Length: 194
Image (cartoon, rainbow, N blue to C red; front, side, top):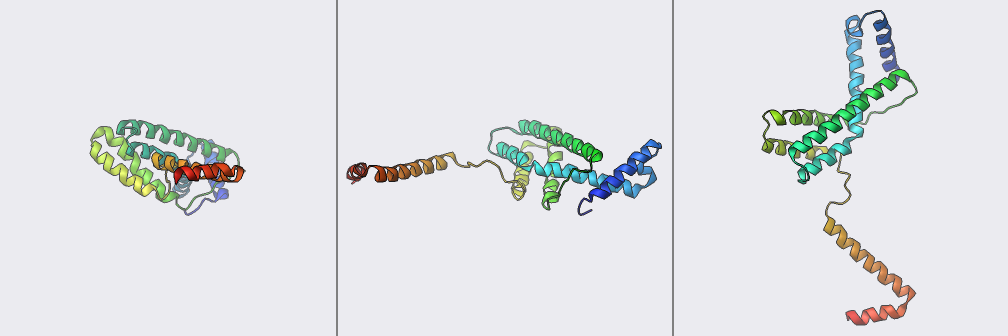
């Protein structure tokens, strides 16, 4: 399935509802249509993860920067993950109830979600044998790959560099403002720094 056809999705959902009222599952009645409906549900779930990709990127960055340890990362990751699964379930329920809802699929979504598929078991097995060193190595690789789809939303990468630039910028702007407003101040400044 390359894209979601909303009309086909609703057709499958309605067929599933009708069959359930008759005590038959879509899986039993038509396995290929059941699998197609599951594909739609997976795509919707992946869309939610992809739309929230920046939260995952920022969380991994916090771990890499040493702000949290691997166990705090695991805890925070699963909080986000289960929250987004719940959003996905709500979206699916709302789509089932209303044909006026629209959704789109980003072309990079599939690749991002494959990284999520690597991240989930890594976090699950942290308590069951994955060493902290392996976790660290794998999380850094995932983060590197994830940057193609979810660069960190943190605008400031080096606080000192930004602070230095800001100080220089305001010094220049202030000097220019004084030159136009009070020329005698400019001549005073040039005498001091000469």
